[in-house]
Image (cartoon, rainbow, N blue to C red; front, side, top):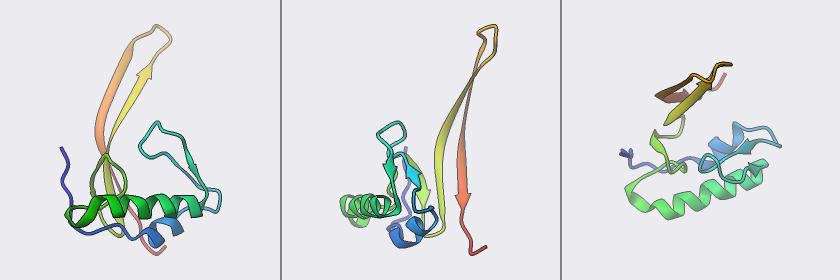
Length: 98
């Protein structure tokens, strides 16, 4: 289930948070997008696809805005004996000027 804030991502701000050789997977598991120029272009493309009804450029975003993004995450841990634990949650990242 997705909820959108209705405001498109600020791609210039988003891209500025990455180093020149930054890497993003979009969606997670796909071929990595490397470099700030490629990241910005991909963000711009998602904004075009989303239209006025939503924002954020990750298909799995729960919510995103100019300085915050929230997304689901699954962590799978396996010990030496083969016992598996799957943890599911929501990760929220907030970016500030510091």
